[in-house]
Image (cartoon, rainbow over all chains, first blue to last red; front, side, top):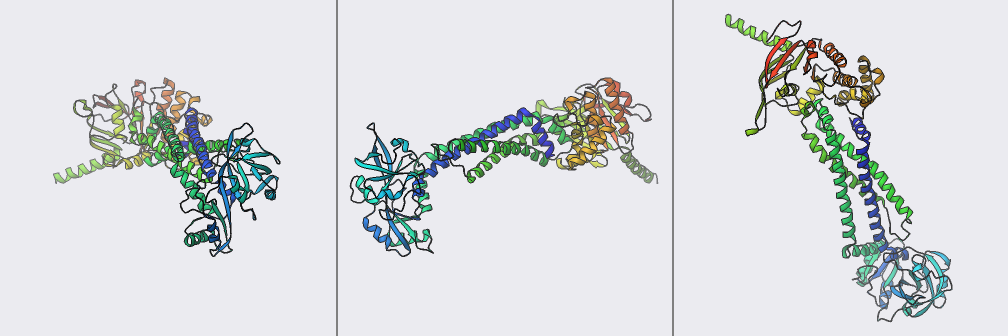
Length: 375
Length: 253
């Protein structure tokens, strides 16, 4: 009877088309909106991933990577003395202002990396070399969002917090949540770029000795120093968690996704209900001929799930193509389609289809087979 | 001694009635609505349908023919009374049991054919076998054979919309017969057809009903099909007002 159910569905092209459009829209919007949400959330942690240190030590009250609660210089030495620490280097991470040629200012994310090891330097240089940072006033510019500061090239100079900065390299970096350009320099030069404060050290980057996990050493640092210490993944979660709990991002996207879900249920539910009404006489005939309620429920759910799966394939595929066409997540649009998102969308589409089917099944189950004899 | 003979006679008569009457209704009533909207549609109907006969249920619109057909076929519950079909009391069955009983023992022919527009003739005819969970291929093959017997072998892959009304009703009959039911119930099977198509349909029903282990009940308005009935039950206002033989049967009401 499943085959009969499929033929009934596929043969009615107008209803099938309406259902397919509805579920394709649900799947597309869910994957697209979900991908934008995931993309934004992922970008919150991009500076952490770009630096890539296994362990991050910070003020114990730090809330996210964008929070600034400087440490004492002595904290660096305290961390270095913790057993299991292979190396520990300072990281200056704060925003600064670049003066543009038209006199306006652009905020940039300034990375001050260890002068000696250059730990935290960009991983991929598009032009120049990281060793160029050893030159006076040298900075490396991240290519992403560099158009905001006039697409500087090697040799160009600009004003960074009223200090002269010379571009010695262009690096390939990710875009972050705030869409600020990245500027890399050495730790000591970065400190000279920003207004002097009693404490300047934002983070201590740490690597564990062989055989120790970052989580274990982070716990040890916390215990020994009273500072905050997180593995790379822990720091990511801390920062993402801050934005999820303290901004309207999840609520805004959540409402959008909820609306998609509700509109999907109403459109698909109504169409399936109309489909059930249209086939009422034949369904009554099937009941008269001895079709059990279980089979009728199965047929109805088959209708819903069939369009659901086709809609998911088309809508999900279209959303993935949309992401690819708009830069695949490295472009301006924050976009990240994960398998988890596809799995959630699959579940949502299944729930929409099953609930919608059950909505129409109620009518089918209540249908008296004697209806078939009515003129 | 006399009492013993009378008892024996009752038993013999009961057994005889059971064997002769695949469908037996006693005191069947059906009413709809409550209070002022209460309507009695069937009033204490007693009826036996005999093996190997075609019984025609006739009467004016609204007299209760279709309700009686629905009740005796187990698609509608009676308000009161006993209904025995091939020795089984369907008025005592649960809905699930009735559904299985209908699937296994009753074939249906509907006034509006009730074919699925998106299924081919063979697939439509195969539906009762598919309900019995027979494999699709086997069921459709058997349906093709039935359609060939009914002269529609070359139309097996056509959709209902591509066929005439008579051809569609023959598909509906193939669908009703394919499960080899013992009881065939037909609601106005010729009302949408021209006389030639109606005659062919009635001949098919007569051929089916001639066997001793079967019975056919036909609700009809169409007086042209009366000659095909072995007996005719005339209904007026929810009662069988007249039951007469029509041809070789000797008994009358």
